[in-house]
Structure formats: C-alpha cells, structure tokens
Image (tube, rainbow, N blue to C red; front, side, top):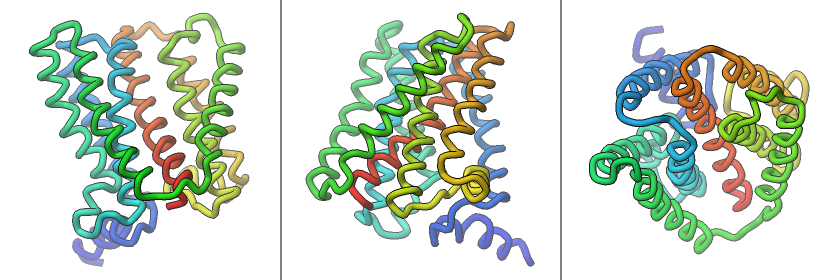
Length: 264
C-alpha cells in the first residue's frame, strides 16, 4: 500500500463514505486534539480563568456545532462543502468562529467578556435550529427529554456518591454531558436503527450491548473526576480539562439527540 492508498483508506474514505472511525484516524485525531488542547491552554491561560462562566459561555458554540452537524446529516449540503461540516472539520470550523470572538470579547469587554461571547454564539445556534424545525418534521420527540432526564438522574447519583471535592458545578456538568451522550447513543442503537461511529464505544456495544456505553461512561468519568478533584494540580488546569471533557461529551450528545429527533 503506497502513501496515497493509505491516506485514502484510513482518512478520506471514512469521511466521504461515512464509514465511521478506524484505529488509525482515531489515534491521529486524538494526537492532534491533545496538541491543540495544550497549545490553547498555554495561550488562553494567560488571559482568563477557566471558570464556570467561561464554560457556560461556550455552550452556545457547542450547540451551534451540533446543530450545523445535523444540517449535514439531513442532506441540505452536498460534497465537497458537506465535508467541512463533518467531524473532525466541524470542530475546526466552530473554533474558527469562537476563538476570534473570544479574543475580541476579552479585548473590548474585559471581565464581562462572557456575556457578549455567549450571545454571539447563541444567535447563529438558534438560527440553525429554526432552520431545522422549519424544514424537517419532528419524528422522535421523546429522545432529547428522555436523554436529559436520564442524564440528570445519573448526575444526581454521581453527586450522592461523590466525595465533597467532587461536588462542584463543572464536575456535575462533565458527568451530565457524557451521560447525555451515552444515553442518546443507547436510544439510537437500541430503538432507532443507528450505529456507533467511534472505535472503542463500537467495541463495547458489540461485546456487551448498547447499555454498556452509558454504564462505562459513568464509571470512567467518575474515576476521572475523582482524580481531577482530589489532585493537587492547579484549579485552572483542572477546570480546563473539565471544559474539554464537556465539549467532547455534550457536542455528540446534542448532535445525536437533535438528529434522532428529526429522524435524519
């Protein structure tokens, strides 16, 4: 296999033909993500605190990315434009919108940056959702309420069994995000005929069934949050890691929920 064939088989075909992830592109995207996350921390860590306001102000951009991703799922876009709205490029696209907006908000609004920053992300997110509701019928109205309800219930369990240092807003939001992702995936595979794109979750589901994903996520993220909240690391770093985890859980969770709601 020459270089072009390798790139085509492990990177291009998975996007063009929507084949899902393989071990090669999964490791590649993970490596790129780690480098990008580290570089962003070094840059932004000098300019702001990664507190609750920062994390909540980014949720509109997560919603925007998830909603735009459903626009591609619904077939409103055609290749090659549609490829830009698929993972991993959708993350780059949203970053290209959010990052300069964040810097400008910091520059002109200082400590109150999060208000303008959040609104700038919320307006297009609502616009995309209006577009979807105007053009697609709601087929499975129950998937988002059910996912949110179960995610909230398991987050409450997490709170009840956690040590005191773990009972903070960002840890609760992190657990909620991944429980939402886990249960939306469970609904899609168990009841609506969808399949899992990612390598490790796909392996778990094939081996132990769809319910294994939310169960595994609860255990894994309980352990991660325990390590984070009981460590001696700087709070800013711990909060930043939680922010990254929220993005990685909430983005696919919202995308899956919105997509299944419209049956795309």
